[in-house]
Image 1 (spheres, rainbow over the protein chains, first blue to last red):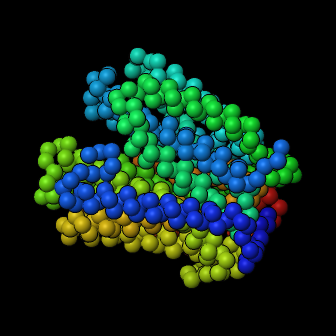
Image 2 (cartoon, helix red, strand yellow):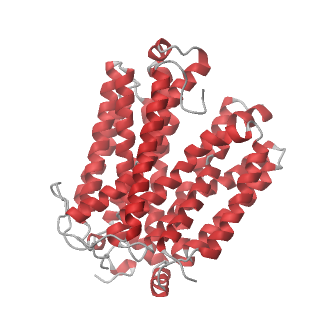
Image 3 (tube, rainbow over the protein chains, first blue to last red):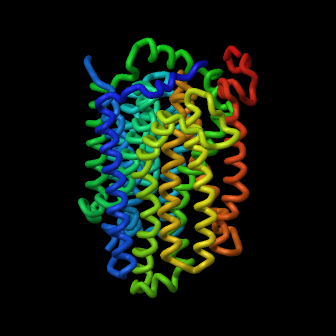
Amino acid sequence: MQPKSNLEGAPHEPWYKYGVLFLFFEMALAIAVCGYSLYLTFHGLGGFPGKH
Amino acid sequence: MATHKVEQLIIATVAFFWCFLMWFSTAAFSPSIAAAYHLNIKALGLLASSAIWMAPLGRIVAGWASDRFGAPRTFACILTACGLASIASAFTTDYTLLFIERILVAVAGVSFVVGIQHVAQWFNAEEIGTAEGLYAGTGNVGAGAGALLLPRLFGINYHAAFLVLGVIALFIAAWYLWRGKAARSVQQKLLTRKKSDLRGTLFVWSRYVAIALMLAYAMSFGLEVALNAWLPGYFTRGFHGAILALGFNGVAGLQIAAGTFAAVASFTASLFRPFSGFMSDLFQRKRWTPLPFVAKTLPFAPRLHWLGASLILIVLAMAGLTASGLSGSLHLSVAVLVALGIFISFGTGGTFALVPLLFPDRPGSAAGFIGGLSTAAAIVYPLIFSGCSNLYIGYSYVALYMFLPIVLFYFWATRYERHPQEHGILSNPLVGEEA
């Protein structure tokens, strides 16, 4: 059995940059929600959104 | 029918997101169900744990079925069965029947491996990490979205929620059947189908590298699921005084604070997962191979190194969780927990960036084995955490006696510079493979 080639250095298809943009958006969302909810909790104001 | 691989990725991701929403919808309404049926804490615990029961065996069967019958048909079957069970549960007034129906709805959790197989059949080797990461990471958010949104949208009316979730699942099933295509070529679809026999499944199960990936996933996703259940109780008991000092009072206040600290680990573990796939792709493009012993010349060797590095980071973070707990610092413990959540996502994303490349002809069977059996680990970790004499030391026990041997086995199983798939417990002729 031979695995697919790695195609090192091959240019990415157009969809890829949008995919990467979306994953960075997801990371930013995770950081924002975590930061916000931790700020609330450490200041005794509430907790994770939806559990105030 | 003309289609594009991005369309296939979107269909699989939406279907997986919805399945995860249905999977965890029981938990989102457990207080309402408990109040309606006057459940005690044991019955509530049983209802909560039932969500995971179907995963280990169900994922193995679903992975094989997606190779055999194609992902669109398999996914549509899962969505239809779970959708109908969800609709039926909306009209049920007997608790025993409701419990059985919600176990049937929990079958939705097995859909993960079907989408992994579907995406693997469409995307090229150099972009598979990001594609699988986007699928799995975005779909996983369905669990968190359910916990956040469903109680807000439906209040305590879980009947209406289960009905709406089930009806929409039927529409997604029809969409999947209409627009979903099993593979980018008929030839590839037929090859995958041909390889999905019992000997092919035995081949995957007996490979050292497949076992190493299964254990790596048990170390990452298994830990993620275990922490979801364990952490609220850990913070409530381990940092009782510190949480009270923040201004939270009573059981409800402790629950809010402890639940928040637990949720950040789960949230980062889900939403950083696509980034891990991207990093696996980046390692591949840059040909980074920093670890000793692990193969360096295989076509996908850099991806093995990314996963190996992720597993080491998980071990270190687990030791850090013990150290921060023993120090008594709540802030430090939460910071380490956020790091652990991110490292777990590196492990989950790194594992499934490799699976389709190691077993290109059997992506479903491989995903079923690696993604299915590993979920059983989620049952073991909390038992060890709670069994230790000291509340904080369990993480180090797991890291030292379970994770470190797994990492060493991973290094050993990935040392082959040619065809690591050929090395396994059973000989190649016995499992129908030519040497």
